[in-house]
Image 1 (cartoon, rainbow, N blue to C red):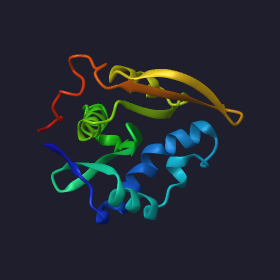
Image 2: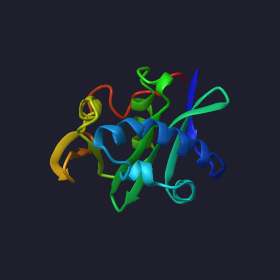
Image 3: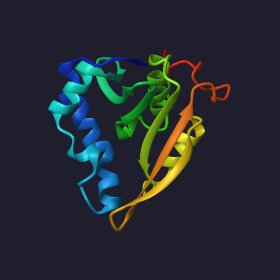
Length: 166
């Protein structure tokens, strides 16, 4: 059974490892490891845990996923949504995104950037109510989709849904 709760600074190394594994395919498809999730350090994740919202998904006593919400004014940027391979396809990524959204009831908008080279990335966020605002070329191969969702634009399964496994 999964649970989602705030990460502690001691979780940064485990979260970093999950992120490196989760974004390895994106690096391969992009033909570069020079993408933010793969260049981020353990220390940077630890700082975000101390200053922003970092949630960890637990399977018993083991972290199996995480997501971050970085707030600037009335906008929350989602970053680092990652789930261990063997735990994917069970709604855990969606539960992490929704938990970040619920953790920030006073923001008016949520935003994120995702790589369109990774199959299913854009569709995953669209199922959660996000819409593509812009597509931006990044280098010779990557096209980034900037996506956003305004508070209150959720479907019936949006912000009010429960966390999987709780």
